[in-house]
Length: 262
Image (cartoon, rainbow, N blue to C red):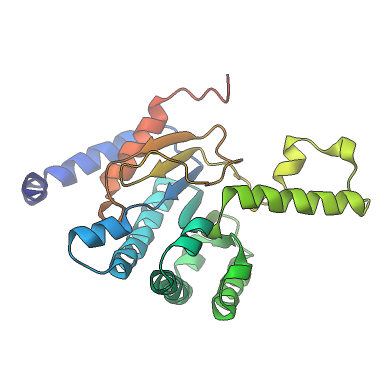
């Protein structure tokens, strides 16, 4: 928009970002922020571009957002990249492009030294059986390379579905009961949570969930983990997401009184 471009030229955004960041840093920083990356295709379509280019710009934006989060003191970030539903319903060409882009970004992440510098443990969550052997190999290699880190955490949800995650957890739990490793009487919420994809993380439940593009839906994302999360929906397409938008979302989180079901 013209007014936005004018504000940037005049330096208004930069000043506002500085003041907002100072305010946010003085408050409670969420330990775990989860993002539903929505709006890549709409961003591309609005510019007459092919969908894959929107996903590429979205991937580059995700790299920026990760740096902003870690610089603010967020310890865990979860990115919802590709759902099981999108894997099945979107065109084969678009899905293949997303997965090819993911392979490329994994290689770039390894080569950049960013995960070593920030001591980030990377984990992919979702149904790997639906991914190609080459992508699975790259995923496992990156996870192995970062397994020793415990200062920060990055979860990348690919071919992910919240209901599927809960079903997988139930299956593993039942197998442990049948094998005698767990008794039925021992099962409670804390025990069950350990069987989820995020069960081995120090902060498995997001404090804050941010969805872009103006849509106000959960879309089968971390259904168990976000039971008490604060939800913020932003009317901005993911490739246009700015640091100001992140700071505003965190400020909204800080302004709310978390009740945890009360």
